Length: 254
Image (cartoon, rainbow, N blue to C red; front, top):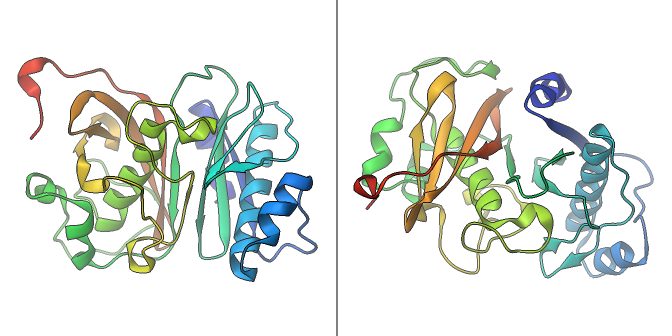
């Protein structure tokens, strides 16, 4: 994951990484301590690792940040600070941006590949043509331009986009789309991505230039973000680069 820092820096983002195995994890303040105290042991370690990752991401873009309380499941950041947090397989990652507080933020880490059967939880029929049916090795690093997408890649792209469209990186819950959780979990196999309303199938993903993709809200296609998905070992990391130009009325999605 640390090898991705230059790539994200070139996109104007800071990357923070933490693990649940770091010695002596401590809350950064009373609000974090109170939140962590009510959690099962594993969730507590994930929660604290996510907060450490967020502070490290903010430091990477020159911003300091103390404790990060929560409102429901959403992280609440101080004014002028924002980050998006994700967890997978004991690792927490976060992305932050120094400038443009109104710009969308979202990331998703999936270190456990998803089975092809999970496509029904992620895609609608008009997106299935994006899937790669070829039996090819899965290589870490940037994905080949023009290649099909795995279910894991499409899931991660949509999950990162959902968080950005909902504006959860700001901790305010006010953004471009429907509400969602502020921190991602282990993927559809563990049902850790449950949301108050809607699902990833309410978004539509499509290819863009340079191996990127664009994810749009089906109910309002003008609400869209550009997402980069990078392969990490046998998993993937997806993160939002910024807003995508809106579509004209004739290009409305079903």
